[in-house]
Length: 477
Image 1: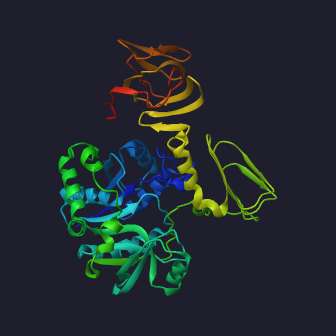
Image 2: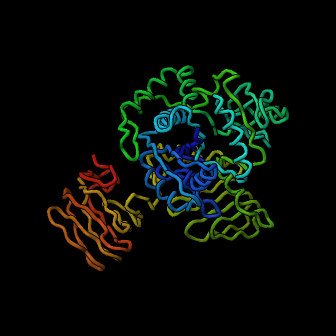
Image 3: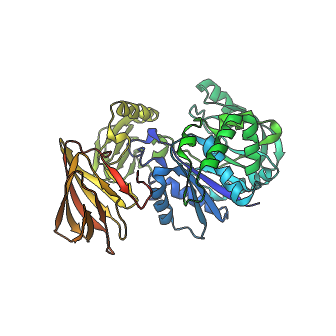
């Protein structure tokens, strides 16, 4: 019975704005050591000795996920499989689809190790020992969850009340408790019987699907119908959009885990593992070393006559003078300044920006694409200026725009340009003009990056003014 890690990579991470955005969410955030949370999760999954790792992620995040994995430089080769969601529907539908996928490939006795992509675990050895204990119980048919011994009365996490010992390093489960008020969290901390719900699980594919059928029959039937409608011969597999969108938005805790009979579940404590869900800037700041005044700095910054501040700077120097307990996160297009004890309220800023329709909720100034990236240099009424980087051998979609024309100037490398019925090469210090409504394509036939400046002009220069006619990455239509 193989153990197969299933990495769930989703969520917006709104409490980590402005670094986390909808198009570049929390799993892709760089930690002070230069690795992303997603890369660390991949390495942790690979350390389990698995021959295959399945990642469930949003269809729009596939290419950046693939690039992150390629840059992770795993020690041993492992097959990387993907299951792509056309929309977010929380963890229960995602895990159910993964169980169907792996049961079809490896049989119902395949053991799934479900790992959120946005958690940090510093003690890999302790993690592997806990996984081994969980896998033994999972092979006997139990649905196993991992519990974190609490070190404070945290009100932002769910809790699990543990029962009697089932085996070495394993406990029974009495109940799940949603995020409690402060007084209750203090009681849980003092009891010694309560654990934070880590959101990590281990179970056989057939055992999970049977419990899903029993606990949430409508969801079970809906996911099965979606799987039947999905084109499973594709690589990667994209879940059928119509049937998947009809599934409920529900977590696996609500759908299954909270409804299990005691003999069907188990808890494995993950003790002294250095676990963190990196759920806020307060948690992320603790990864940076503190100076004598308690300031933590990630990037280029100075703090004078300041105490207890966290400063993160990406592109420019930030200076803090005579301030205390501030959170300062500076990105090229957005700046967050807050009292550190307000870190959990950052999501309210995102809600306000979303209500205003502001682009900073969704996109960074630099946006990754499967063919490379673009950076918005300047934007105003009726115009936008971009720096576009196309990787060697890559190509943008064949497309047209209804409302804007484009002027391209190549500053490095060589571009192959399709402009209407014509195709020609454009070299350094050469340019071409694309009138509105004209089908066009840009590709890089060379061995180095093609870098160009694009000037858009027209009545509307939004990113949604694009009609893809043909695309190498499956985005046409």
